[in-house]
Image (cartoon, rainbow, N blue to C red; front, side, top):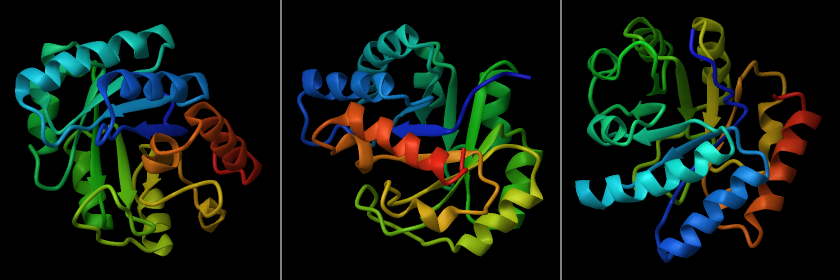
Length: 211
């Protein structure tokens, strides 16, 4: 079984940043304690996505943090990333698993218990469940209740992470739910100091016994 730590899962957003500033923020997040890193690019060409992924992967390897590519199995394979994450409208989990191989990480989005069970049965290694709160990073946001999150955690034997508008001030809503970790974008990406933001978020999650 492949090993990875989903406790503080950082998802990137390069919008409005120069490449230099973006890569700096990614590295600061890793210094601050991010344990899993997802590169998410919705608007880049395949060539641009691969070029950026190679640079991000170089940084991630420096800190022994697995790189997950959002949506694109081809980009993950081209850059030898450690994994891929597929959403509801992306490639089926089973197909992603077949292409990536058994030794790579395949994550999936799930919003219901049947959806979660199906993703697990197709070979997902972890699930991202949300949005717990409204988020500014996606146009379409369908909120997921904490009750549903708890039910999903109890329905599958793989790690389940909460995602969607989470930050150190509001993650207490997750208390008592057996999640494996939290996924964040803006709380770190848009912070004045990404390193401190990651460190403080992780400390708060530990304080609440979420991770």
